[in-house]
Length: 100
Image (tube, rainbow, N blue to C red; front, side):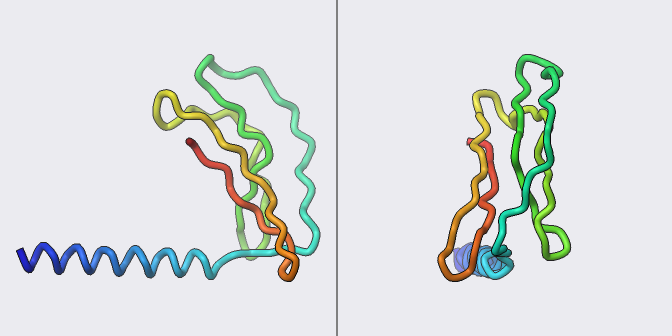
């Protein structure tokens, strides 16, 4: 029992450390980048979902990764669009989209 509890505590500590690291790696910009013009093509199949504006951080800056079709990871899931969040002191930050 003690061994099992110890493993749970170690795993919990690792998860907290991982969350703290990801929170410290936030990127803010003063001016939002503009998404390139995307032409929505025909869906490759009836279950595909269009992922429009989406951004990821690479090399310390935002890179557009949207404009593509994707299959939901599980049946019944839908895409929740990402959005820009304004912070009065730090600027704009992208909140990524996700499957919900």
